[in-house]
Length: 189
Ligand code: GLN
Figure 1: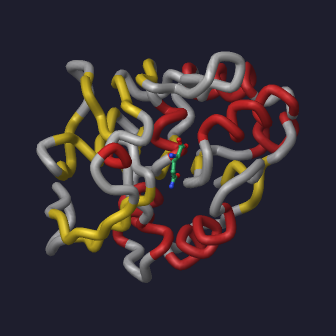
Figure 2: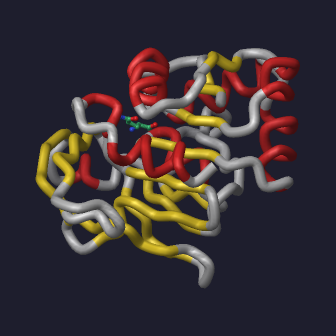
Figure 3: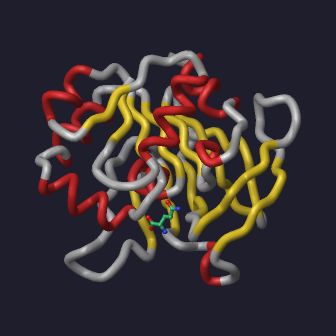
């Protein structure tokens, strides 16, 4: 599978996927996107990644693959990009653009209005025992469509969701040694 490698914590996701038993490679070019059967969109800055998706001519090919059902997992900035709709997407002309993989509305930097970054142990549907979740200027989910399952919440908002073989978390499992979320994604493919 691929890890989008335009910006963000690509290396941590590559390591986590490999530890979870997957073959993982970076994706920067349309030809590389064509060769992967699933994609991870890392944490980082969704506005920068959106700009680079256009620059690298990946935006429409990626939307097309997602519309076609390619499995994807997004953490933090990746969750924002996987949404159908983004609230507080950024300054006009430099906004984060929705790739429309998961039927949800995501608020960018949602927790940031209260506290920039925090860590919390949260229950995660389908995993035994809580996950230590690292939130960094994290989004939350404000609306989910009928086909979206909420797997975890924090401060009363969904922070992990799944729709078919699309998964998204507001937090960064790639930054802890816990590989269960990556394994959940890998095992679903
Ligand atoms: N606030 C960032 C964004 O808007 C996300 C932060 C992160 O990925 N840690 O993309």
